[in-house]
Length: 279
Image 1 (cartoon, rainbow, N blue to C red):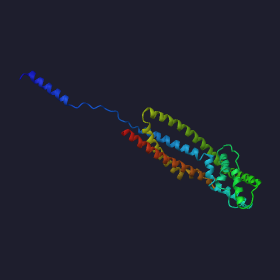
Image 2 (image 1 turned 180 degrees about the vertical axis):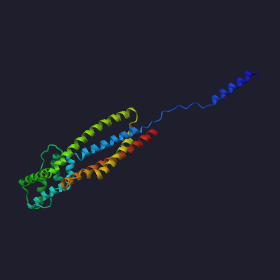
Image 3 (image 1 turned 90 degrees about the vertical axis):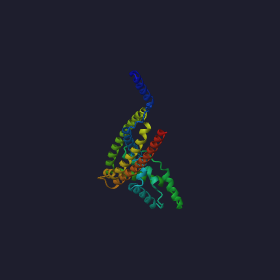
Image 4 (image 1 turned 90 degrees about the horizontal axis):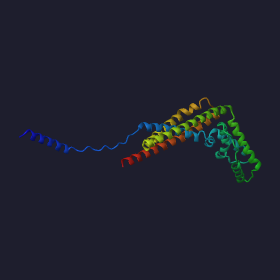
């Protein structure tokens, strides 16, 4: 057998082996996770939730007035008004926390350095008149007007103390810091979300970011409840301590609830994103 024949069979075997080799599989692009981006979104979400939560609660005069109306300061004003009415023959405690809330909001606005507006005394007058009518007497317009003025006077006395004014300075400073942090974090979050959309990682970062951010809010809220509020009220006594403690606990309760909602929403987004990606 000639050398040429052996070489031909050798090359033929190589070609057959090459034909039997599987064709290289086409590489499909894989989904690249960006845990760093999700963590950054979580941090921004946590800070934004805290600042917005405080803006809507602790630094909101209407909300704070409702909280204070159920505190020792609010109860003192309400009891004083009802005692004055009782001395005039109108018993049954017609003045409630909801009726005293607009007057307490005036004192809260003073603490926040905001202009106070006049209070519509219609609801208070109607409550006093209805209670008097149920007792078979009549509450004159002069009496209801005098009670409205008394309510304003009592609130002014409660919030114009030296201790309250000292607390007002800290509150106003905290409000400014909270506002600027909220604006800055909002801008950073918008830029981050635009970047995530451009990199096709919007949902992949939004879900973990919301879940982890909500968890951070819960942890920080609990930590502030246990240690932050006592630190804030350190050195205060009486009415100031009662007001700050009540406002702090109520506001943090709302913030923690918001964190729980963010955790649930983040998990739902994450689950939906994974289901959509697998399909």
